[in-house]
Image (cartoon, rainbow, N blue to C red; front, top):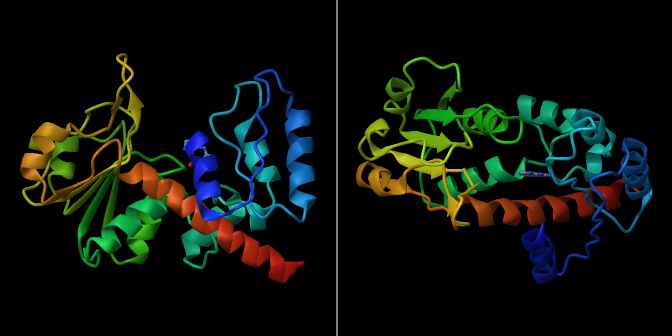
Length: 236
Ligand code: GUN
């Protein structure tokens, strides 16, 4: 959240932060979202996840006005991504796509393997790669012979949330490896889902943690917010 706030300042985007107590009730949170939904000076709303267990996450996400949903988590925006006609792209998968594009990598016809099927990363990532004509496989905790699948990947996206889960021997020679994992280790250091030291020997291109996908995610949030400002202006 600190980095998001800082990015707003750097971009000249006005922001408000509400640090609520962990004991906040569902009604209080819904009431704040409703206020922000109606507030003309606010273009985008983001509820940082996870939220405390006593509040149903889906209820909260559904309460955010879709035209202010800069995370693109609301079912309306999820549906739009599915059909390929969308205003907002979820920030992390969007950041991954931007890295691929800026590196001059053509997705069309490539074997794309995503490890992780979360609503925030895995599922939307699959759609974005599919829209660019990648051949997409989503792997998860029940996938059999995972290594066989990851070894097929021309583009491998690791979004599983387990430190150093993907090792060098699971990667095809020359593959593009994108590490979405941000895991805090006991020693306080950040670590990705990919074991960088072994993976970089096999990969043709690889993103580090920290410093790879993370900053891109925040950049994409800024992009969605500017989009939301334009969208809300034309709809007012
Ligand atoms: N928690 C982890 N990643 C995200 C994200 O992209 N958006 C929100 N709102 N919460 C998160």
